[in-house]
Length: 287
Image 1: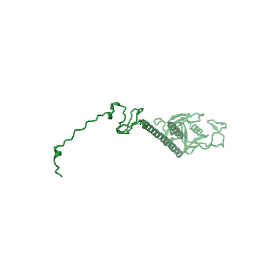
Image 2: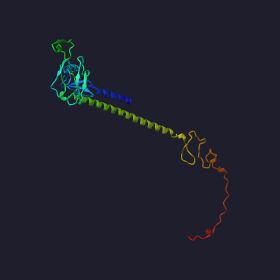
Image 3: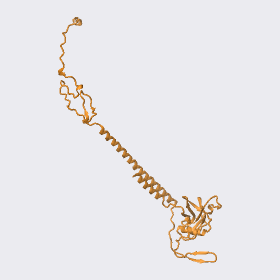
């Protein structure tokens, strides 16, 4: 019972801790709004920035915005540099890719030839609209191929993200629930332990009472001796002792310790006559 309760509590704690938990390959934009800011990539249980060193940054901006639920993206210059890790330093993406983690990623190495720092952090601004489902029309020019998306009035809500305060409250609440559940479990475990101890003590007390002889197993010895415990519980006295007369001794079952019969004692001879001594014949001087 206690093990099942602990497993349930641990499962609840895991669910609380996994709320809005980032997974490897997730991205986010850190800025004043949910569709514009510094690009960050989640890797090795930490968020890090992306260095501005890709071959086709325009395609990278579009893929980032598609992954976040927007249609188009562009470079954002005025961003606040990051202070943590730099995860990616060179990204190569194909046209049909919709997630940054599916691109060819090159993780940052301080010893590599790419000299990236937080002044090279990528900033992205996305169009605050959902991707259109209308078939796109292609406009050919002499040098560049552009893809034109017809304007749409479809709006989607901004990507919601928990603020650090809300995340902190969720973490504190989950820790409190875990601690409370473990405290309740420990209380019930201790209560059951005390109950088992009391039950064992009561069983020992009952066994001691059963070992003690009953009133039928106690015999009164003759001559006013104190009572003793009879070793054989089935022992019974054939004839009860009756002290009706001092001239009649009580009967004894054991002949070896039976006293002699008072009626068979021979009468002694009478003592010799008294003869006065010299002291008796002296006069009494005190009279």
